[in-house]
Length: 443
Ligand code: UGA
Image 1 (cartoon, rainbow, N blue to C red):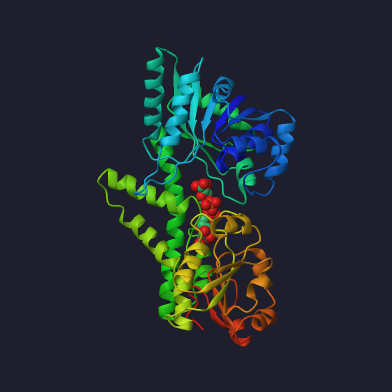
Image 2 (image 1 turned 30 degrees about the horizontal axis):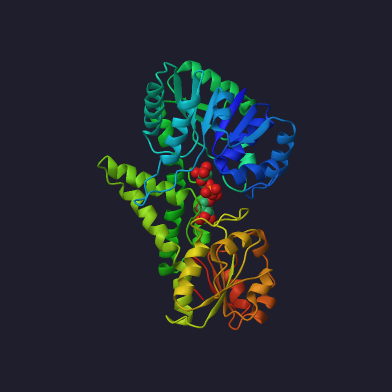
């Protein structure tokens, strides 16, 4: 099938590549000329395990094309995906200007009926706004061409996007047109050959499903973080509580890891956007507001533990920070806990020596001009002469460090572990002051 994808960001590029891998003919359109010319040379704008060879293979096979020519894109695909960004507005609601601009472009150039699919995470009611934009532009052209607008939210995770896309838990399709449903089946059937993964529903329910999923996961995390904070007051160990409750199959083990807050381009933005959507229809979403508030304060947890240990004044201290990306297996630092920590440390007059296995270029781009940041080449180099170690992300290579090296390198043997990687008892035996998240009385 001929498919066009507008917006070659994270979601757009991964989805387009996977469609091509399954044999569809895909044209990718983006306004960013540098990005398109890089992609043609096999330079991939994001770090995602397994993506580069797939892009190269399908580009070489001629099934995956990259262009800045919107007209070419509109003429190519019977199905037109909108996968452009929806950055938060100043008030936290999703800004739809890029989505609506693509809708206008499609209506400007279409010569045959088109199925327009919202893949970007968009608030409930966006499909209606996209329809309105398409119709207005077609009316201006004096055209009587027809179109359908479908909601097809994306559920992939950074770091395992290829796997998530190839073997999806579900493919949510919001449409009330059986003919469109048929086309979507044809497009997606190769993904769900063994078992039908497609869940078809009305457009508004599909739009809300995306937010509901991310907000539910964010709620699980904030719930655990609240219990972690309570565990510290009560002298309980949240890691034991986690295993204790996860064994109940109704609760399950996933997404109940306490830590120094959730980050990334999705959870913080989506929780905020649903809160704003609720306010817009005169509903106060008390639970979601609490989820957001808990996460906000949880991201300051490592910093307050540092102050607990060293005293309020951190002037002149140097802190080693391991893990800058918002989670392992990505170089993405959007809304990362590391940023909240480092910015608080700089504000307090402290210096940072940072290391991340993948996000060093991103850190350089964001903070490269600071003289109170040293970007270290290895995790050991980040420790040299620092006063303490703070861990923001649970990269595998941080799981079993040489604690003797840590003790020798730091001026005071103290670890502030935002991801509960180590055993507090072992740390005590090693003579290391250890501050985890919710591990009973710290130190
Ligand atoms: C998330 C969802 O998991 C995807 O299903 C969704 O498609 C995606 O958002 C999206 O809307 O595009 P992602 O942001 O890539 O994916 O990352 P997650 O693996 O969900 O992690 C988000 C944050 O939660 C990370 O900061 C992670 O450290 C934190 N987290 C996760 C915890 O603190 N505890 C947990 O138990 C799990």
